[in-house]
Image (cartoon, rainbow, N blue to C red):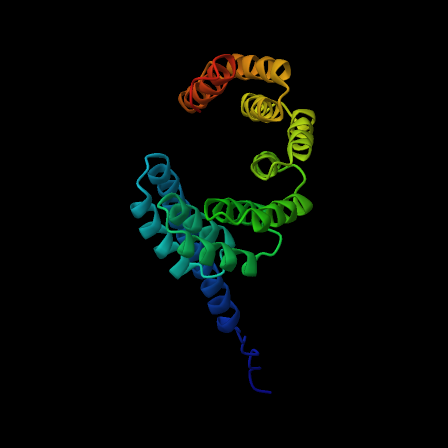
Amino acid sequence: MGPQLRPRLRIIVPWRSILMRWDQEERQTVTHEADEVARQCRALVLEHANQGNYGEAIALLDHLIAEYPNSAMDYNNRGLMYFRLGEYEQADRDYGQAIALDARLDSAYNNRANCAVAQGKLGEAIADYQIALDFNPGNLHAWINQGITYRDLGLYDLAIENFDLVLVLGSRLKGRVYGERGRTYHLRGDWNLAIADYQRAMDYLANGLSARRYGKQVERWRDQLLNPTLTA
């Protein structure tokens, strides 16, 4: 009987599985790197916006939108930059696209409402502020902005209700709220209440550059109340 042949071992290398896993890891690496670049780009947008370099911020957002065409927040932010440049039509278009991509993005409704106010469309603004608040009742800026718009329409009681609610919701923005509520009392003829709120506002607005800037506005309102011969 001749020598028995050993069975040949058959090594199966799962090349397809390996290649698929390698491809997936490569894609994850590339995606991670792209996300990091986008994060840095958005940080630069914020930096330029804070410095008033709105054109540079828009250029960066153009690039981001080209790479992430479904990013509602990027459209919303670009709309805000256009708004600050006074380009309301472009701003409206971007806010609309942001809302089309994310119908629950409350900040886009708030921003679009601000744009409507700037164009004298106060009724449209009230409606957009309300949508923002329906989606996010904690959006303090929308409550304040809607209150100011109510006041501009002469609806002082509704405005005061908004400002009262913000004071209940949280401690942020109290200086601004007291200032705006004081102005509303002032225009409604409740001068003692107005003076008290103006003083509260200035107490809260003692610190911070932007706070001090708004504090100057409150001082002008107070001085106008105490000396009616002064202009607003």
